[in-house]
Image 1 (cartoon, rainbow, N blue to C red):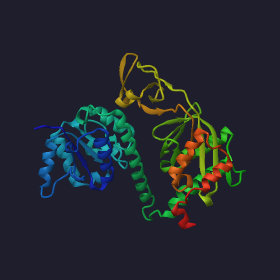
Image 2 (cartoon, rainbow, N blue to C red):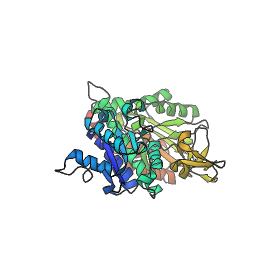
Image 3 (tube, one colour):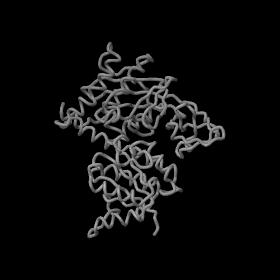
Image 4 (spheres, rainbow, N blue to C red):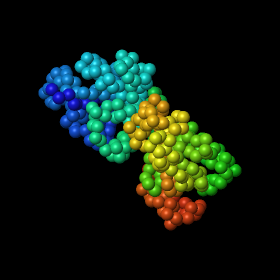
Length: 400
């Protein structure tokens, strides 16, 4: 019997997370044929009508070379899932049974799942890449790296939205968060407060922030905001979640899970909550490429950086190994993370979906493109004209 299938074990309550992983990472990112995947929640990949479920599960596990267990609180409370764990454990080699932690699970909660390796966080880029590196032969040794990278970002975007939905629903156990609270209390008011705190002597309106200390205060306060995980950055190249902000010793800032390095040369802000005009608009400078420290040498704008500051190539980061001073190094043991620089300058809006520049994504991206090309001068009048042309978020209008 050929043992090349991938057995997906998960709770039915976690369907959205698992379906996105299977579609984006396994099917589209790694080009794994759908007939190699058994996932009970997905049409065409689960138990067919009329089949006896235990027999089908046993059959599929016997055909599998890899079992991925998507562990969550729902998973650990499911008798069916626990049975699947036992079957996979009894049939496959321990190193082929891999716990994949969902956002509400922790390593300390694995308990009975203390197999031959730690669980991987399937909602973080590093965990996904480690799975692919460790199980490349069982998955697909000839996948397209560029295509996979794009699908990982699509998947993480979907996961962030799911986490936001869960976070919103769990904010209060006794009271569901309503639209007004999410819009005003959780988004519009907090950003407005960050800006007002930094420039208390200014009135409502659009202001150019030239003082570096004030720029850093705004971004530092923003980096600590609870809403940041669901905040957006929008620029000519598109948009994505801000997720996180971190200041480097050089004074530059890292934005998002991509760790996009930004050197701010100009900043504009607006405080005008009644009209949804709030924004933080920054101009990032053109930066030099990173110098690669591994034996591959050379320079690149897209690299991996170890905790000790050693810089490796992006391919080495993706593969999980690098050759440094003639020795092969396992990068996952050194906490490698991605780092990206741009070879040109960009104007970037930092906003939420409730702000006009966030709600009107296409128009904002187009506006940034014109700013980058110098077709529009960055000044108070032109920004006001742009904001007045945008549609209002219907939730804000409903409560105005």
